[in-house]
Length: 400
View 1 (cartoon, rainbow, N blue to C red):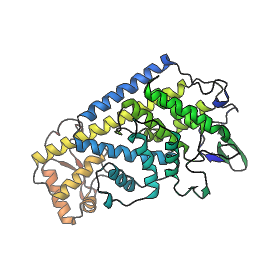
View 2: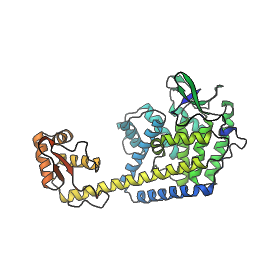
View 3: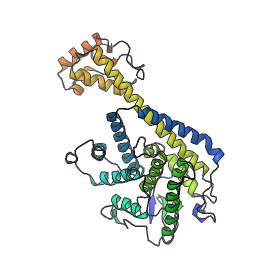
View 4: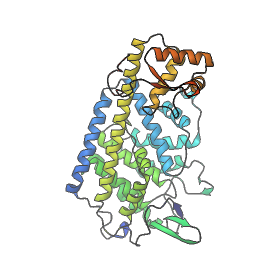
């Protein structure tokens, strides 16, 4: 059976890491990894520091954002698109932020969030193959991948090779990887799960290294007919949760992997299609993704804090703003320094605020007179921009 992703590297020689006589004794160069791990840990520390200062409602909102990003991104990597509103609503229900009766259920969304939740909810507990089977069955509740019937809730059993290929019209397919035969999967997974459990009870290596190796090891075995990517990423998330000893999702690794999916595919391919056991390059790259994901959360929290400060200062200085003025100012703030494409105009104000053209013109004029907007151009070319966007990350907004 063959599963496909885009090719980022040319075809490699036919030697897979699992064919090495040392398999699965992965090797890493601790000295070479030290800078990347130190940077990742520093970013984690910054993230945890800024998150610890959040109010409960803000922390809940952050987790909702990260759950949503994680579910959408891990599906996107596999070529599946989930609706943002559906994912966010379901995640809010799972986090206890929305009454269950108000949330419509979408099967694909629920299946993906089942895995996202499972990766964190039981971080204190041992991981057995039955749990992996449950994750897999949740992803394919109707027993099909697309229109193809597959084994669900169990390892693959087909005799034909499990290959990752890129088809080429009129030319031979490009083979990127071939996994171990199905008959070997139960034994290989037993070894992986025993290693994973031993690392949970008595950590033998850095938690980020453990997460990186767990993901690579799982993807190298490719134990299921489909869904290996999503379950493999959930496994690495579980390892990271065990490392941080927390079930809070404060950052999204899948979002970072999606943003650098070319690097993700390439690094996995290089690490799995080699005749040696040294996976230092893969772990270094993975640690870099942890760093970037954590720094993304820091930036997100800081941006949210800056926006809160913006509105505190704005409300104090201009308490008489109308709801429509607040709505437009909020849109302009979110648009950032670049502002709206083509600038804010009277017509756009009407569309955003849902007011008449006369009201839009009057309220824009008031905002200019208050020093909140600046006006450029004349006639139909008149455009408006938010004043003093430069200090967005400061405690307040000068001039308010």
